[in-house]
Length: 218
Image (tube, rainbow, N blue to C red; front, side):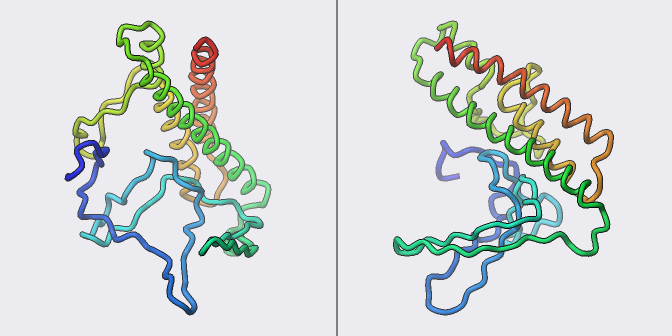
């Protein structure tokens, strides 16, 4: 509310719980990893169900990390400490390892492509913003594939209407939606979810082909 250039969010600002910070005091401290990949900028959300003022925890729109070996890295006062950890599948899950592996691979592919689409959008906006002539044909083409972010208030929780033509942003959203639809349960992806993956990948390939052609010409 104080910063007029800040992006508008779709939920009341007083819902959010305070950020959790690792204490710098001496002694043992506990810090919980939600086991999700890093959220992509602009694709994070707060829970809109059962919200409690100042107690609604942040919910990242990102897939869970697959079971396997990981490294925790802590940087303090210029010193880096690392510790290996093992993420294991809940023993109560009876789904086969092969099926879980396929679910993880598909989710990660969608996430990686969404990350790439976001990076392309950032590059496209920098390129467009560097063009001062609003009537420039190249600028108009870039803006059509990477529209500038709107500061207009969102229409309720649904946000602004989506453009009809595929953009880098819409491809990113479609990819993440396909990934997150497979994260609700530790079961094999359904035929509908696989179809969403195929369509999301096709949209991503189409829009990235258009963007790569523009970036090479520029």
